[in-house]
Length: 192
Image 1 (cartoon, rainbow, N blue to C red):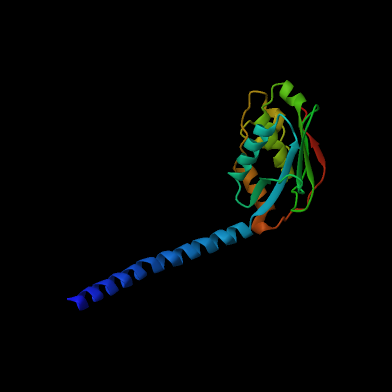
Image 2 (cartoon, rainbow, N blue to C red):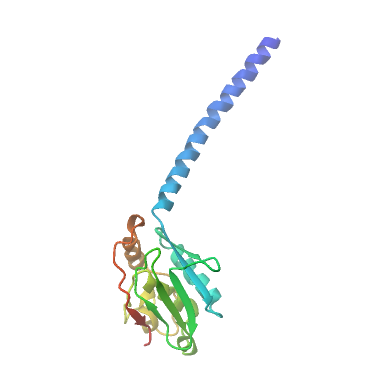
C-alpha cells in the first residue's frame, strides 16, 4: 500500500510538471514577443510643466495617440529629465514643430489660449499639436473626422482621435522602431 501511494504521488508530480511546462513555455514566448514589440516602439518623453491649466487636455491627447498607434509611446518625463517634446501654454494661437521628432531630438508644442477663447476644444488642440510633432501636417480645410484638420473643422468639433490614415502615417514614420522620415522642423501655426 505505501508503494502505491508513492507511485500516485510521483504520477501526480509528473502530471503537474507536464501541465506547467507548456504554460511556462507559452509565458516565455509571450514575454519574448512583448519584448520584441517594445524594442520596436519609439518612446518619446514630453514635459508639460509649463502648461498650467492644460494638464487634463494633454493627458487625454497623449492617451488618444498612445491608444491608436502601436510603435510610438508618449510618456511624461520625470522632473528634471530631458524631454523630446516641450509643451507650454501661451496666449496666442496653438502651434507646434513639424516632426517626426526622434528620440533625443527636440520639438515644441504651444497650446494657445486664443483658440480656446474662440471656442475650440482643448483636448482636440492638444492631440492635434502633438500630431504635428509626430510628423503630421495640417489637412485644412477638412472634416471633424480628421484630427489634423484642426480649426477648419469648426468650434463644434470635439474629435481628438486620429483617423485611420493619420494613424497609418505615424506608424509608417516610426516603423520598426526607427524614425524613417527626417524631421521637418517648421513651426505650424493653427490659426484659422
